[in-house]
Length: 107
Image (cartoon, rainbow, N blue to C red):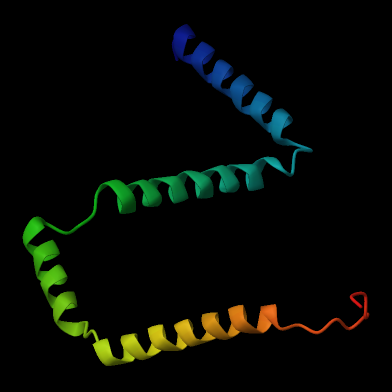
């Protein structure tokens, strides 16, 4: 063996032993690595979902057209709901003006 190969092996052994000494007694190091990896993967998937959707313009238009066919507006039910709301509003406004004086403050 050459002297340079011996020096490289010795240095690599020193580095490995140094890393072992640093990691001993630090049980929270490995879960921290998994936590950071999890967060980074979540950010990656979120970014891909938001900024790189898999639909082209033709597929988007097809989806919009198919959703438009499914929606049916029932005008009669809508008008019934609006009329009931108006009745409730009128009832509330009229009943608030006819409250009795339960403490008999006015004589």
